[in-house]
Image 1: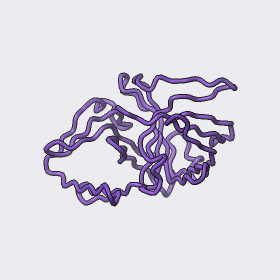
Image 2: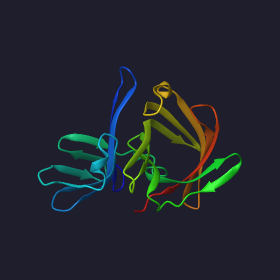
Image 3: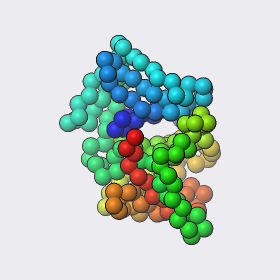
Image 4: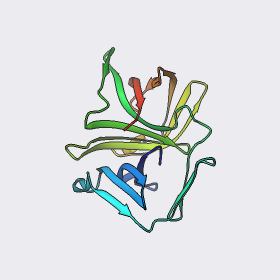
Length: 194
């Protein structure tokens, strides 16, 4: 859970296999409401609004804790700089930076909360789910490190740690490093607003 967005993922830690991911926007209005933006198990659910009238929700913003029907989620309140939901707005390919419109239906979103990260590639208009990966992260003094616990495209990536140099420029998160395949990587991420 981050800002107004959520992702729930399932994966098997014994054989490093990805099982499923679902997510989208959430809000509280006389209950708990989810609007699904992606569902790796059933794309027909994309666009659906799910309303939970009897869900017990306890949010403590000062402590960074949230409880939903007894399941506890903890925001990483120590890392205010990167915590939240981000959309990929630029990627360097063959030495050329290519910018992306973050308002288009095809998105790559990365969420950081509670010391955990997850990226998701999806398309709302086509109800497409293209991949996800996640695990734990640290971000200190310009160094961002991802420790991969699950990856839908290649289970051999699980267990790797990827290090990046990062900085915030004009509100955007820039990071440089190497992909899980060893290729140079430079990405720009913009904080998600809608």
